[in-house]
Amino acid sequence: MPKMAPKILVIGAGELGTQVLHFLAKHPNRKETEISVLLRPSTLTSTSPTKIAEHETLRSLSITLVPGDIAAATESELSTLFSEYETIVSCTGFAAGPGTQLKLARAVLAARVPRYVPWQFGVDYDIIGRGSAQDLFDEQLDVRALLRSQSETRWVIVSTGMFTSFLFEPWFGVVDFVAPSVMALGGWENRVTVTAVEDIGRFTAEIVLGADSDAAFANKPVRVAGDTISYGELADLVERVTGKKFERTVRTVQSAKEDLKKETGNVLYKYHIVFGEGRGVAWDLEETWNFKAKIRGITAEEWARKNLKF
Figure 1 (cartoon, rainbow, N blue to C red):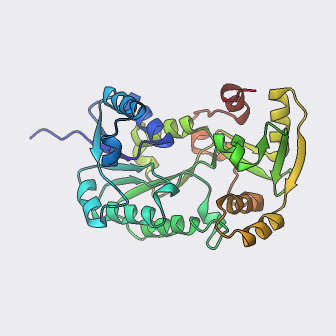
Figure 2: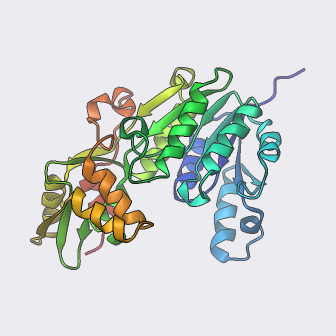
Figure 3: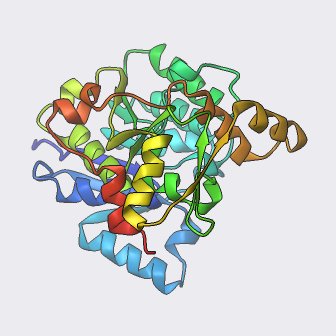
């Protein structure tokens, strides 16, 4: 009986999932590997021209579109669905709602999926620890504890730091191109690690399909990065790129905590505290998986010059 082709399931095709799917589909080691993506039924039946075009692009890459609602489905239903796959990569983030990451992890383990990449594309939750300002982080630690408690499913966590684009988002409040101003979280020497979403897709595809794939699934987190910069270096960067002078202000952890007391559900303030405290949010490029694999990422300045319009 011929050996079945390996099957990979990516959960979600948002900003990150789309990149992961693209790089998996184009990877030189893909060969006979079957790649599928789990999408909500309402997304699959959407008449939006944008959605239709996105789905056609995925199909053109020989990616199978699978209907499934991770929020509505039970753990048992998800486990049945997951049991067909050798590798599952979760690309659905906090927007999926509290409890989702833990439900997915439990379903993966119940299905005895051989390899799992959970949604942990962010900061180092182990170092930040429990009880941080961002309460959703505790669930990420619950997922890690669950994965570490077993040995049947091999896993790898890809710690990316902040998505590079977030650093320049107006809603995040760090860089304001209109004012213009730069706000340091915690202080000018505080550092933050950033990775462009396309690099996260590229690194993840290499971890899943690369020559050292088996070694990568070593039941522990790996760190990747495009850049690690201080807020002082960020201010210099935006002045260099725009040719303008930016006002510089500091957002102290204490001021962010006081604001959070007044608005306890404010997600922005929670992130200001976490990044202002500076624990588990930055690491040296030389220690990253991609540096050791000789895969260079996009720096913050390169990203700004390529993507920002002034």
